Image (cartoon, rainbow, N blue to C red; front, side, top):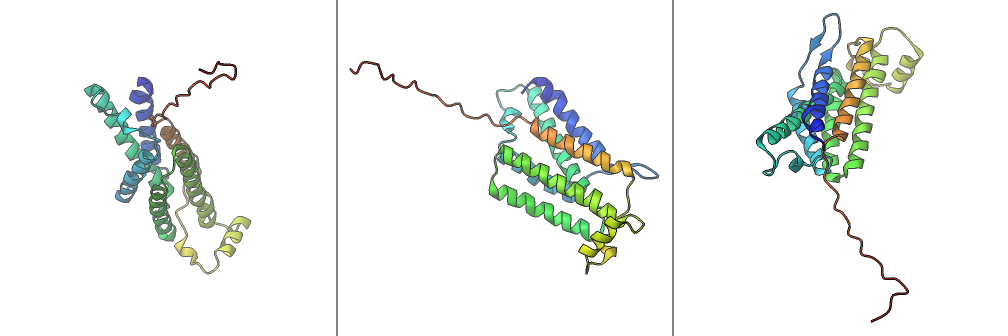
Length: 217
């Protein structure tokens, strides 16, 4: 990993995720920090990232590195943790039954992923599917249910959810630009995870095969 990526690119990407993920665009735009619950989930998520080999902490902090380099490694880990918490908080609905369901979903998923011990590629695919699914549920499905009016999509969703109290599903309808900001935030987070210094694969020593024409001693 180049010094520019470690010292500039990764912290900037994760700080951008932290800022964009905290934006709540409405009549008065606010910046919301990640909740304590999402901070706890982020600790588990960072642990899974390290366990999978997508992040090698020894490449960020080691006795062979200078104090300044180790300090920069700490900054990368801290911003990764905060960005993970913000990405999780952004993907969880704001209130009601969907918030409870997605909160439990993320906890079970992180614990299950940790038990499965995936490699780097499988973890990246799992994160993309998880955050993509959460984005669709929050900004497409719940938005369609909570939006005023009686559109065809809303009627179809309410028919599928027959038996569930509609009031428990309704969310505050966000500004239309919020979905685009959220999508950009989650994509940046996944890119940041992909750019982390991963564990080096051991090199295989291939011995030359003896030639069929070589003389037998």
